[in-house]
Image (tube, rainbow, N blue to C red):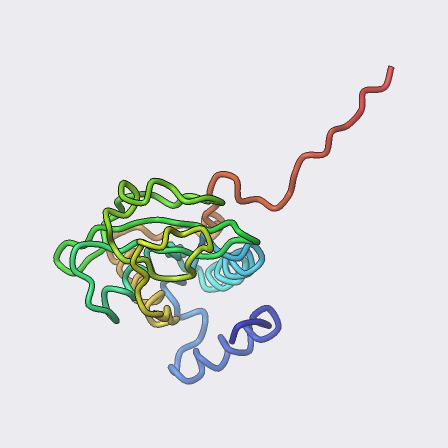
Length: 194
């Protein structure tokens, strides 16, 4: 669903654990997409994951949204050397990252950045195709890959890998990933009174 996750997420989770034949308290870990991405959506995901993990005495495994998108591209498209990923933030601001590919696994090349104008694309993505939300300011020469989807199963697999590698966190540390400049809030100048 594109919207209304906040209204349906707890019911969907109840249905999922019932279908799997487990109780929430049986969980060892809870994976969630930690962003970057929709400010509200990422915060809801983190809060729900923290609550479930706290109740179950489990760890959390935050999964980068850009890493998940790169992995989905590797699994769903014929990409060889690398992939650039883009996720809309707001208006004309986009999160961009790029990943080299080695043995079918993405490795960060350029870390997540919030951009409102095109970086030096040759340096940023080395001519790799872009997957995700193409920014309107993307150069016409930049290759854009077909759409890919990131499902809960992929987040679960990447989270399970992180947990197996000992990268699980205490629930209170399962926070959204914020990229410099991506808070929608601005400081308000307070006048000085004498």
